[in-house]
Amino acid sequence: MRPGPLNLITDILGLRVGNAHDPVLKSGVTVLTADRPFTAAVHIMGGAPGTRETDLLAPDKLVQEVDALTLSGGSAFGLDACSGVADELRSQGRGFQVGDQRVPIVPGAILFDLLNGGNKGWKRNPYYDLGRQALSNAVTEFQLGTAGAGIGAATQNLKGGLGSASALLPSGLIVGALVAVNALGSATVGDGPHFWAAPWEEGEEFGGLGPAPRQPAAKAPFPRKRMGEATTIAIVATNAALTQAQAQRMATAAHDGLARALLPSHTPLDGDLVFAAATGERRLSDPLVETFQLGHAAATCLARAIARAVFLATPMQGDLQPTWVRLYRG
Image 1 (tube, rainbow, N blue to C red):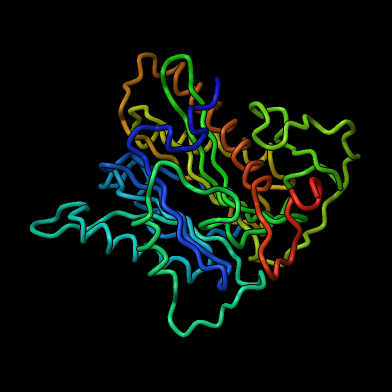
Image 2 (cartoon, helix red, strand yellow):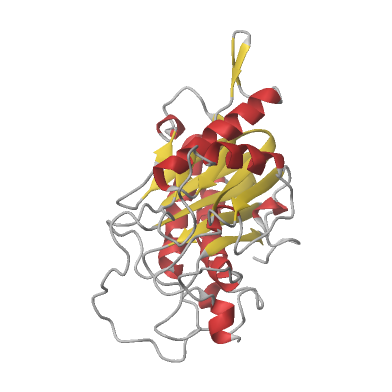
């Protein structure tokens, strides 16, 4: 496997990503959409998730495709971003048709960034407008690091952010990941600059330092965030034609990448969640082998995307945590 030309989830033809954020608020929204509806699924492993319309992503439900997936800051307030995205899609004539009405299907997930130093004293929930703006901003080449849903994100010891990565499989299938990293755990080993995800790094996409020369002794971690203050939310995508059940299996496998890149992960205090998206461009020639490969590629891409999110974070006034670059590259 090697990265696609952009090393972004948008290496998958037809996918676009839009960011919108407010530096004073220190929060934002990221939207994944496509030229047409796509198959989607979800798998949740964190103990404190915040979601919208994830129940309809089960394989036995009526609606099998969605119009967009939304990642947002703002805790429960951020779920309003999905309404902004849905209204903007409706104005474009998009959505599930019921009689003469169209209902855009926009599942979403949120992370907690209410205590990150930004001004959260709004009188009107800002996430509706941020969602609408993010969809309008959707492009193939988008900003990583301190952007969109990751602008106010944090990890145990470093500033978090928005990350993405892609992988081209020999079969012609493409896999990509998009993630907002706001974890209870750490993306780096001990007090040093090395990333847990280093064994899966492609080139020098997050510094090229390789694995840490010495692994720290195992010890029981102590949470540095309080209950509800963490969550890493992600999307893994492919150009394959998948059923909802196959997409859900890809989302499940992708959690391995989250666990490779963040220690600890999937805690009772995180809302760790992975959506899966499949555009259907390429049919599987060998479903058993290729779904196996898609799961592995999704996990690998997600681990890399998490490290890139932290590596590419940039400083902002009032930050409560240092960025990786400022701490280790000066």
